[in-house]
Amino acid sequence: MVVDCGVVGDGRGPAGEVSRVLAAEATHSLLVIRLCYLALRRALVAPVHPSGVVLLTEQGRALSRQDVEDVLGVEIKADKIGDGSPAAMARYESRRRRWQSRAEGLGATLPDFGTELPLDERLPRAQFGAAYRAPLRESYASATEDGRPVAPLMGAFRDYDGGETALGLGPFTYMLAYNDYATFFQFVPRAAEESDIIVTWLVDGAAREGADYDRARLTWLWTVTTEQDKSIIEANAAGIRSSRYEPGPSSLLEEDLDGFRAWYLAVIGPGDVVRTRSRRGGGRYFGV
Image 1 (cartoon, rainbow, N blue to C red):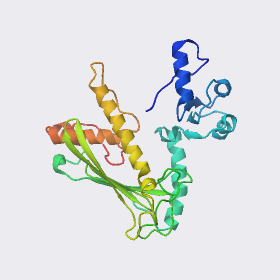
Image 2: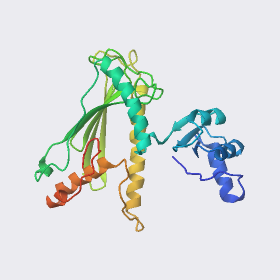
Image 3: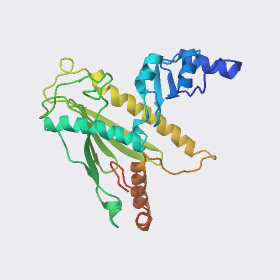
Image 4: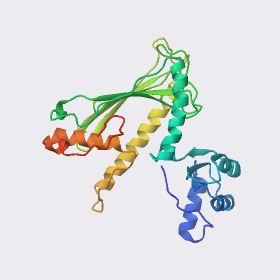
């Protein structure tokens, strides 16, 4: 469960006290903060000390990530590297180039591929897909809770390169693979608001459970993530059903959602629906 406690100040009044208690008793308490001297001063005297920080970075600030971690004594759990802004994408591209050089040295690269949508008037019957490799979080060898490998190397991999291989086939089948394991996702629609999710994990054929890998460590990431996604999707659906809901524009990170919507509307409606949509581009699986 995730609770937004708002500004946890001096705890005055019933609302302030509830926020303070929730933040203090939580298993994990994340402080959202900017690179600001005054914000750091307030955080130091706040009645609750966070277990981690979500950093809102801005250009032109004198403070750094390291300054925040040193002053507060906690790790920055997330920043705006994934917000789609030019500055964030520049940071990611720099990291991607460093990883790409290592992956090329190990012979573990894959040309990016993605089907551009809309295809043509045959879109509803067309097959499409995507494939790419990308770096994991800095210092992570595999997609595990602690970043350490969980199983023996698979296939022709010679070392752990800290990369992720993503494959998508159509709108309902995806695979995310690492040097030591792969996870397949199959989405099976059952009704307008109901789908099954089938998740399958693969390791090297010679690996033995208990000796070469631990099942709990192997399945941790995509079990936790899938359960979280389920909660988010169900909450989002409940919000859409509200009489107060109003649709809005997609964010910078939702190109794939735009593409899926274009494909879906083509499947259930006339082809003119898709042919009149403008193309935005930028999606991993759907370029619209």
